[in-house]
Amino acid sequence: MSPPHVLIAPSILSADFGHLAAEVQAVESAGADWIHVDVMDGRFVPNITLGPVIVRAVRAATRLPIDVHLMIVEPERYVAEFAEAGADRITVHVEASPHLHRTVQQIRAAGALPGVTLNPHTSEEALRHILPDVDLVLVMSVNPGFGGQRFIPGALDKLRALRRMIDATGRDIALEVDGGIAPATAPDVIAAGARVLVAGSAVFGAARPGDTHEARVDSYARAIRALRSTADGAA
Ligand SMILES: O=C(CO)[C@@H](O)[C@H](O)COP(=O)(O)O
Ligand SMILES: [Fe+2]
Image (cartoon, rainbow, N blue to C red; front, side):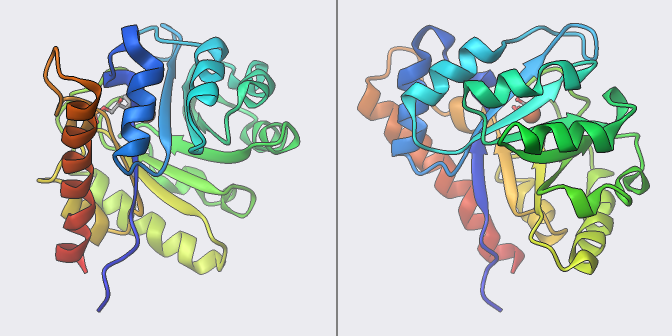
């Protein structure tokens, strides 16, 4: 069996924000497929990160697709602004959006591809009736809010269930996983059906302080290859 095609989406949450454009360009040169941007509001999650102005800066730094993960309450108030700033995909939490169908339509109307995601304790059944309307499903394998947390193994059952639900639609819906993804956890999530791996600390943590740009590109390329090559083992 040939290995599944797996995309790697480095999360800039673990990047050096003092040199954000250079960090984004380094992971692009290192072979990243998407740039994952974690937006946190201090209400839906206990952390505050960034807004559309940073997405605009990332847009100016790269041609890669920008994958925006909104961990905010009332995401419908902001999706147009993030799309306008350059987001290609915008993912909202089912727990944060009581009128999820309307929010998904708003994302599409704003010109971005809509995604939906679930906290670790939320059942995949919450997504059954929204699948026909989305292009991406994100399974959280940590409690959202911080990078560098430990992978929650219960995400594997959820990935398997969502793989079956997605395949039954006959539509091309990306199944992405986020949190604690490293060479040790990647084979299991790929075997469970994930095809887009978000990785923050496993990629950006590979560089050392004071590294030159070239050394960073090398370290990130090794980290991305290490994740991607686990797809062979999962085949
Ligand atoms: O959405 C989140 C955290 O809430 C993630 O995207 C993290 O940024 C992933 O970081 P690692 O677990 O890969 O370090
Ligand atoms: Fe994320």
